[in-house]
Length: 495
Image 1 (cartoon, rainbow, N blue to C red):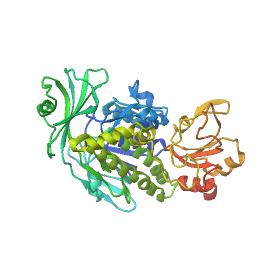
Image 2 (spheres, one colour):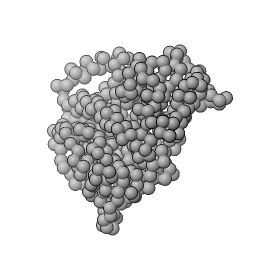
Image 3 (cartoon, rainbow, N blue to C red):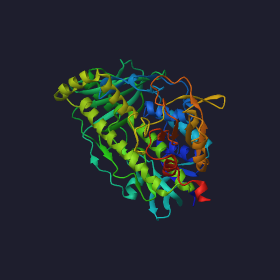
Image 4 (cartoon, helix red, strand yellow):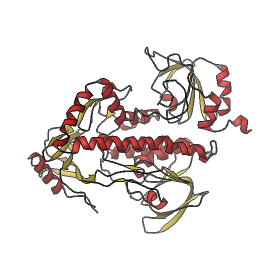
């Protein structure tokens, strides 16, 4: 085998997955058809959940100072994201190019083998391994083999097509433009502004004097382009909608996109898996696409590593589809809904008015903000009444062994964590057979507020992706059963 895992695509999803695999000690080759990163800003910023994910791996500091905000929207209707329970706000203006640079540096530091200028052109799943045909920068073709292949190669994924995944959904009904421009002074339209002829958005990208604009003109049919639109097309559409001439601006890059919505029917077929845009495409409402892909990678990485290393059975991989496909379905639903609110005409105005009234209720704002931010996600980890089961472990300051730590810091190594909050030697003894995969930590909450989810909790089992797999009291499965389900058999049983 050339590697345990081959990842196709060195965008944010593929690079995040490579880092997760290397944290667990799995060798990985990342292939990307581009000889170098584009440097284009593309997807901007991170949702609250992605901020938490980066924090649990100690990556936030690598991005420097980020502008964060609690201001958000749902389909162009303002929503206060400050109602969410998180120590992080969303970051609004981090260019995707910066995200990719950070993730590539992290993955390389961990030992990922990233090969650019390599175009995956075919694959063969032989049942016990996968073989791929790759065209190199000089046109030469080579074959590489691995135990598993993950397609993180975007909405037109070669991996998805070659492996025969079904990708049902709806085709694009319109075309929209996106551009980063300089030398023009535009009023911020951060959540969009609607006109009779369409919708426009605009906002500054940091302090470089660059403005991101998005233009959606009613009645613009989708086109199958082989190259980006000209800036003249974008400026003309902006003027038709707003009456403002921006044709004199200097453009850094221009792109077009549509509102196609498609979701793979399965995220795994044998030894081939999909993540990110290869598994789901949609209207980029709320900036959810890149963020969902990064979270796909964090869900998949530790599971794939455990199977490759032989510590967990192959069936663990089935939980990847089981947990992330419903997230994809919710993503399709909410982006379609936002498209109707945002991009249609006056006939939808009564619905906008009703929803605007409902958003004034905190419970409604919390629901919509949680949906767009990914904070609503709860995985089916097992029955029980404990409020944390299936949710992501919240950030909690902890004191143990005469030092301070936190639930976030404990996840830096990408391992499972059994948090013993009552110094229970019997509990730790029952988990000892998994100590090669799960860190056993005795600590107690420090300064936890009243009503904390850890109130009256004696122990919590946290998966490497940060989600709670078991808690006491409140889980109906016992601890060894939960440990074996998520981390494989005890090494004591194996010996």
